[in-house]
Length: 138
Image 1: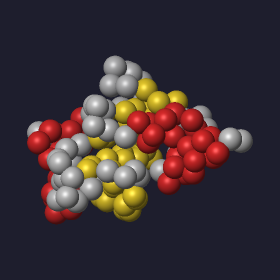
Image 2: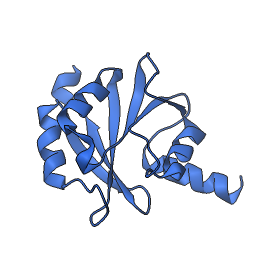
Image 3: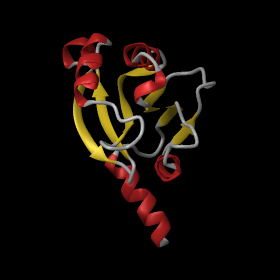
Image 4: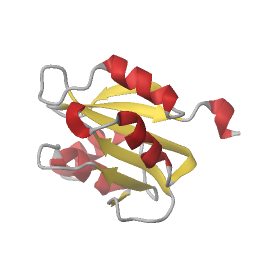
C-alpha cells in the first residue's frame, strides 16, 4: 500500500465506512475537500445526487448560507437505509460558511436525527455524524 493509499484509508476510517457500502455525496462544490471524497471512494461506492436507490450513508457538504439545514437533512434521509448515517460536513470555526454547533443541534432532532460524534475531517472541514435515534430504528 502506498503512503497515499494509506492516508486515504486512514481518513476513510474516521468515517467508519467500508467495503460494499454505497455513500451518496450531496452539496459538493469547489470549496469542498477532494481528499475526503477520494478517501471515501477508496473504500466505498461514492455516488452523486442523481443516484436513485437506497444508500448506506450520506456525505452532506453544508455551509451557513446554503439554505434550510432541516430541509436538507430531511431530503438526505429519503434514500438512506434504516441504519444509515449522515455525515454533515461543515466549515470549521473561523472559515467562510461556518455553521454554529447550536444550529446543527437544533436542526438534527427537528429532522428526526441525533448527533453522535464529530471528527476533524480535513484542514477546512469538520464532520458531524447524524443517525436516527435507536427508538426510531425499530
